[in-house]
Length: 336
Length: 267
Image (cartoon, rainbow over all chains, first blue to last red; front, side):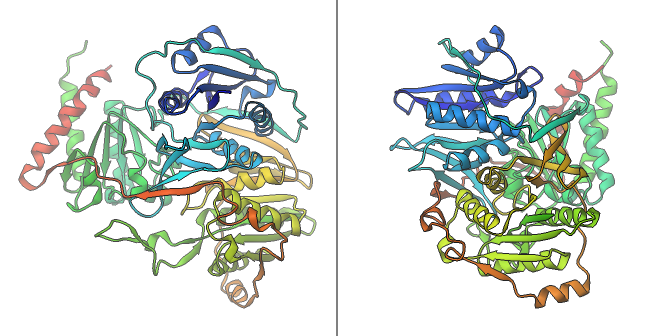
């Protein structure tokens, strides 16, 4: 029997979140090292998938699409998700289950792992297969510049959550057409929980995970007012504002802006770290950015080790200079 | 009404220093504190107690080495009624599942509880797995990332969860398990009197035998995951550093990089 590598898909507004494609891309890579491996994309929806959605999951690397249908899957419903995943996991015996480390993945995966009495590794940044066919799950370990590689030698499935923006989707379309399989599980769900309301956040609040340019600030900005320069700069180039943990802890800015292990992982084209010293927890959340620019007055700050360009000086002053110059340039651009 | 709060003792990360030679954490003399997010769970329990007309008992549980007593004393100083330290050498090397197994057993032994509260995650391991794992083992509905407790009765709770695309309001019948974020409340500071009292309290301890737990399900033996290796990652980038007289040149380099986005964004 072929071994299943499951990717738990995540939905956003009738389509799939980019993390689904990132995990499919990685799953295809590790599937090469497991004999007879099949990549199955597990979707939990309240209706059949459209042909377009199936095609998309197929070309992104799925061999099989397991669409589990339940009316409660409009949004993440803990009890129904858990019972549904538990029942199909027992049926298909997957070798590996991967899910994005989102609020959904980080809730359902531990519960599922406990139900299946197996291991789970949170927030992996690397996945590989060793010679014995075990999944190697690498994650930053706390406190030092350390990466821990975890495996689950004697239990199946092997489970991991992966931060969005960690891996890349396939660059070329997967050539096979995925088999589409619909499952309507009969679940014994009491109505212990009920979604009363969903308040969507406004679209103009551009998420730091979707921005091509991210300006992040740290304690080196010295005072909350200096965050305004970051915001102005972000506005000017259509970017987003990030922050290191100390700023969030001191309530200068909300948790939704936090970059790092306990915040978001970002992978923009350009990441600017202003007044951030470069604790490993922060670096873990931004190190896969294309270009990293560090601004810090301490030339020995660890952040420079993770950067392509380092500017040594007062963060607020340098940001001020950048802002002035860019604003001038913008004003010179003739209207199209 | 009975509320259980799960707490963890963690090293005080503010005091953690990195070894300049090896880049690893120096753990000595870091001090032990209660996991900061757990303070929000304790505060939530205390506020519910204050609003309930009936008698409410709050019991804190912590699995850890004897030093984890520190975390439980902090919980008592804030106002929890009772605290149990679950400590045993056989628990050493436990991963999140083995930890959740022990905590669940203690909750069963001293339960039933109407509500189980936990911080969203601990600041040292940052896995956030133990809460939902305990919930699954005890077959309780889990409401995670709770940022607000909206309403509370003897039989049900209404909460607000913060998720990526917005806020969800859920109602759950009791019993259930909540994991709380720091948005949920502002934890109180213990009074001097309470601190004194907490210092004198004898913390009750439990172990593998008193909880009648199967030894093979705890500690390293009961942990499905194994650390295969620890590496110190190579630094992948070589920054071109601009300082002093060259700083301006560097700033222009950055401006050049950002310029294309300016035009794109030009309306």
